[in-house]
Amino acid sequence: MKKLISFTLSVLIVAVSAITVAQTEKSDQSVTIKKLWETADILTTCESVCYYNESKTIFASCIDGNPTNKDGNGFIAQLSITGEIITLKWITGLNAPKGMGIFGNKLFVTDIDRIVEIDIANAVIINEFQVEGARFLNDITISPNGDVYISDMATAKIHRIHKGILETWFTSEEFINPNGLLYEDKEILVGTRNGIYSIRIEDQRLWQLIKDTGSIDGLVADGQGGYIISDWQGKIQLVNTEKDPQILLNTSDKGINAADIDYIQERNILLVPTFSDNRIMAYELIY
Image 1 (spheres, rainbow, N blue to C red):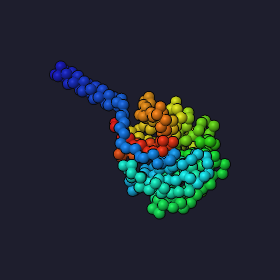
Image 2 (tube, rainbow, N blue to C red):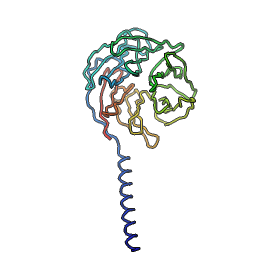
Image 3 (tube, rainbow, N blue to C red):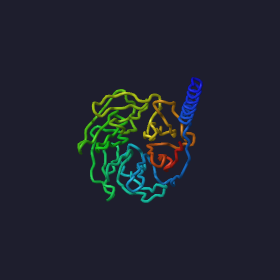
């Protein structure tokens, strides 16, 4: 009887060990990336992309000039999920539009020193928020209650639109060029030149979540517990608090930028605006 029990336990231990090894091997597998499509190079100085699930379309902010010039050349383009350009100049008259975020049927866009609010259904600007002292408003993230958070890369400030009122919400000397923003579980994640920080919304407690990432432009969640970051020069990485970073894509040597990315989790599609290359490229992430 003792021999039978001992044998049974041995079999169980081996089985559990095999499952553990298999799980470990699976978790350690690298994510692969496959190109799906690219647009024509007519999205001039394309800085940011934003997926709108309601209509299964993509918005692209196009500076069409210098990122700091108030020249009125900037526009928003509207694309299909397969890369066809539906309306090239869906919204016009902007200066240097960059980061975008959607709440309900409203699209919020940074535009140097202001945020514009666009009614998506009617394709019209319905409001603007002028940010006093702003120099380079960049990315946007929006919480489930509709609070809009905005980064200013030049002043190291995070602004917020709360119940229709604009305020300076957070600033820190630890930040170096804060850019990409991401709302996640009652926290605001901030991509900077020196890593990813997390700010707890409730009490504004700040800590560094991931170090040594290099400069961050776009910052999105991958839906697998990690984050996808772009560095503008052309490198895109998958980073995690538990693992070493993995380079998914690097087009720096080709002179193709990777600006403010977006990721469609339910389709595993990564959208990459190429800035001075004037295109959007789409890739599938294979886990």
